[in-house]
Structures are given as structure tokens and as C-alpha cells.
Amino acid sequence: MKRILITGANKGIGLATVRRLLDSYDETFLLLGSRDLKKGQEALNSLVASQPGWKDRLDLIQIDVGQDDSVKSAADEVTQKFGGTSSPLYAIVNNAGIGNSQLGLNKILQVNTYGPKRVCDAFLPLLDSSIGRVVNVTSASGPTYLAGCSEEVKEILTSPEVSWTEIEAFMSECLKSNLESEQTSKQGSGIDSYGISKACANAYTIYLARENHKLTINACTPGFIETDLTRPMAEANHKTPSEMGMKSPEEGTSASIFLLMGNPSGSGQYYGSDCVRSPFDKYRSPGDPPYTG
Ligand SMILES: NC(=O)c1ccc[n+]([C@@H]2O[C@H](COP(=O)([O-])OP(=O)(O)OC[C@H]3O[C@@H](n4cnc5c(N)ncnc54)[C@H](OP(=O)(O)O)[C@@H]3O)[C@@H](O)[C@H]2O)c1
Image (cartoon, rainbow, N blue to C red; front, top):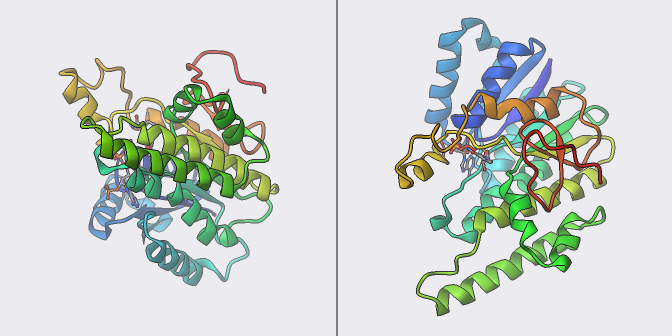
């Protein structure tokens, strides 16, 4: 059995990823991560109601990726349950994320960037050391944000040698300038908190893959998908999600599933929603030629 932990799996793209793996990959066992046990249990119940046989391939794990203690307890729980087996985990999908810029840059970084790091710090020792995989669900907002940055910032965050210290230093700079501009401007800072968090999560993917060269560690965007995260955008534009070009959560699982179960060309890379390798510092549309840099 390939045990796969998916964070933020009680709804949206995370839940759709659990469902698709259960449906299409008989050899998988899913650890459905949810920060709220009740919501997680409801999600698990809905899966089992649709397919009773899935009961034996599912487990619920309470995990708030923004909290050290929660992530540590979750890792302890998984160790207790499966630590006795030769490879407790086949893969980790860092899917949990937030997008509401009103929450502020610090909160968004804590979930979208520090979240995957917290989870990997705690769970990497449980991962199969020869075939293990990590999928970081980032976003096209990362490359789009980086495209507008200075050459110096692009170089740091896309360098094969990027260190966590450099990523953290960049986040600290952003937090500092965000605070300063919030204090001086009535309009707030106008900073792209979500784009920063995902550009840094992409850079973390490069770093993590380099430090764990036997594992396959990649990032991807799910595409523009109708979920609780994006629905407010449609409402603000007085359009339906499909008029906005949003696809279904199921369609948003393709890149993650490819990086989990398919044959990506390497590690430390970023993939588009069409499962094609894409650059870290420029948006690549689905259908465009692969990035080969
Ligand atoms: N939808 C898109 O178009 C799109 C595009 C690019 C990237 N993404 C990325 O795709 C991922 C999934 O997003 P989605 O669209 O499926 O959004 P969603 O429906 O809002 O789901 C987000 C999930 O993350 C969980 N979560 C939030 N904060 C958490 C925390 N601190 N600890 C643990 N779980 C937490 C949520 O749990 P609760 O139910 O408890 O809030 C929920 O399960 C995110 O990383 C997002 O940035 C989405």
C-alpha cells in the first residue's frame, strides 16, 4: 500500500485528490488531513458513503499546518500507527492553503510557505527514503509574482543553490516593507501576499529537492479551479465561476496526481496544470511548450 498524506483534504482540490486516488489507484491508502476534525470526518464519511469499500483505505489525521504543535502531533500519530512498517509513507501532498489577502502577509506565509516546511520537517523521516515523493501545491501566482520582481530577487528564488536562510530573509524583507507601507498608505500595502507565499513555496521546493536527492519533490499549480478559495473572485466580478474560466476540483487534481503517480522528468521542478514543466519566474499557459531550462 502506498500511504499518502494530503493536507487540507476536507474540501476543494485536496478532497478531490483523495477521491481520485481512491478511485483510480487501488494500491493507495489516504491519510486525509484536516485542521478541523469534524469537517475531516464529514469529508471521510462522504467518501465512504459513495464507495463503502474505501473505508479500509482511509484514515483521518488532524493537522493544522500553521501550528508547530499540531503538525508534530500529527506526525507522532502517523508514527504510532504506521511507524512499525518499513515505509510508513509513500508521499506527502502539501495542499493546504489560504488565499484571502485580508488575512495579511504573515498569516498567508505561515500557512502557504512555512506550512509545507513544517510538514516536511516533521514527516520526511517517515517517507520511503528511496521512492518517496513530495508534491507542493503552489500556484501560477508564484511565477506571475516573480516575473515582476527584480533580477536579483528572481536569481535568488530560482537558483538551484537557494537556501532556506535566503528564502526566509526574502520573506522577512517582504514583511518589513509590507508593514511600512501599511503604516504610510491608507490603501494598505497592495502587496501580492499570495504570490509571494507561492513564489517562496516554489523556492522551498528547489531547496528541499536538492537536500533530499533520492526523493522526488516537485511543485505544481492545479489551474484556476472553482473552490471556496476562488468563488469570492467570481462573486466580486458578478460572474459565474465558469464565466471566469474556473474548472472543477477534479480537473484541478491532474498535476498533483501526475507528480505523485506519474513520471516527472526530475525533482525540484514546477509543473503547470497540464502536467507540463513550467518556469519558476514566468507564467506558462497550458498548451505552451515545456520549459527546458
Ligand atoms: N482554486 C484554485 O484556483 C487554486 C489555484 C492555484 C493554487 N491553489 C492552491 O490549491 C490548494 C487547495 O486550495 P483549494 O482551491 O482547494 O481551496 P479550499 O477549497 O479553500 O481548500 C483549502 C484547504 O486548505 C485547508 N487549510 C487552510 N488553512 C489550513 C491550515 N492552517 N492547516 C491545515 N489546513 C488548512 C482548508 O481547511 P478548512 O476547511 O478548515 O478551511 C481546506 O481544506 C491551496 O494550496 C491553494 O493555494 C488553488
